[in-house]
Length: 118
Image (cartoon, rainbow, N blue to C red):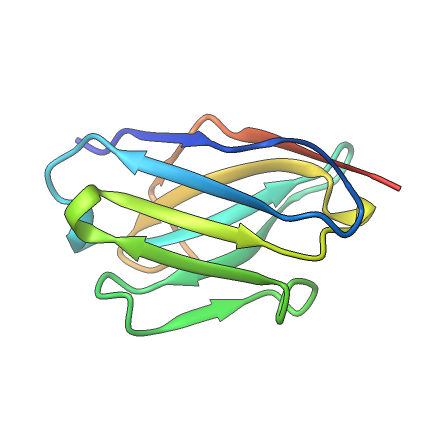
């Protein structure tokens, strides 16, 4: 069973940084690719970043490349999203996801709100 719980969201100003965390309470965390998606009001849920089960490969949406970094600690069943140089356009609910591949996850967290003011 995969249970994902995100934390770390909040209200920040443009240019600030935030680190999101997602903990899986299940037993097979290191078997899954992990990803972060986001959904802004009135828009579809979009892929932000993904990481393979080993952490050896990552990929990012063009809009966050160079500003966001995804990482994982399999000993802690946790995946992170370090977000730097935040922009108002980054405002969204951020979701943690798990699956055999990062771009087609099977499991989702409940989401955490990130709001970036200008």
